Length: 446
Image 1 (cartoon, rainbow, N blue to C red):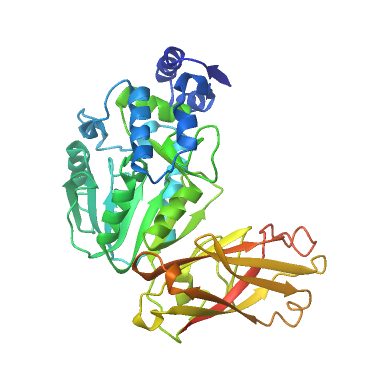
Image 2 (image 1 turned 60 degrees about the horizontal axis):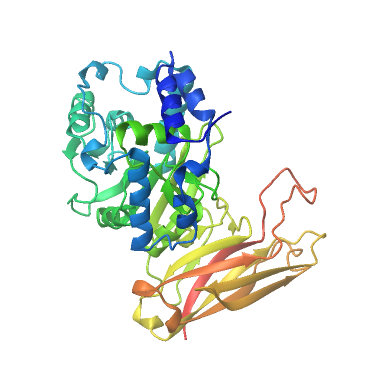
């Protein structure tokens, strides 16, 4: 590990890394870098205590980026301005000539395509397509692809790169936040591109407008960290690792990172329930799939079994669904519901069929149900309620109209007191921290 304490030392290190003989050596050099936060003044400390949704926070991030780059951020600097034609026959990642880089990226592309699981020929809008490394796979499968990038060199390259593919390919050179397209897409896809958007909340709003009913927003291979850490000591902002600082210092690119809690909450605020799917093979095999939740109809039951409608509303803190229901995972789980139907004008009672995870070592499980940080119910599951062939038990949560968010949306948060894994109690090798499962739920008006 190499520690640098000043921007001058950082630049010297990056110059040496640039001279590395191979892609692997260069990436290993970047990974070996540790930066002393003292070189950044008080920018990190200020961001930690600010409201991450406020204009002041965004302005402070802009000032920080200007400090890191040594000049104003320019959208035109995103990408490369040199001739890309020599790459046409090879393309990225193959141009890296690194078995590790090529292998990991190819795993990632396949993982993303499989996880999206869209029938051909679905319409996909890929925003920030770059040189088309993923675009070519989508085009060759036969998808109807619209590839967008702010850099016309990139879109011209993609158009040539995808010539002769069975899928229809349209390229557009545009800033993602000024894009104007109809709501006709089955998926809006960002692959290593969303983090280049300074005004990313506006980008999410835009992306939602392009989706047809039932469409998905996909954030793939984006730098979304489980929690704040040394390379991202705030909810969102410039990442402070070697590879990122190289891109900021040398090219002036916007290189943001996000904590999972911040990004998931941002998606929820925009009416999107999201699930994160990752592989241990490579950190690039990672995506967050979001959908707009359907409006609840009074008396209609939503199953939380594999492939059922209730899964569209499970937001964060849930395991993969099974044929009988879905387990909570970890200490907090959230559900996003749409109660904008006139039937719920005075509020709603949500009735859940649940199954607690109560091994014999746990006498009782306690779950606190909250809306807007205000507890509306407390569920107590005593020992024995799990033991009768895992039969579901009923629990309710009453939500007053005053607790409705924008457009009648409500985020129900479940805080599980003692999540525990089957491995911890010797039942299996399952390491998931389980609390309770939902098999189905129904909304009734007050």
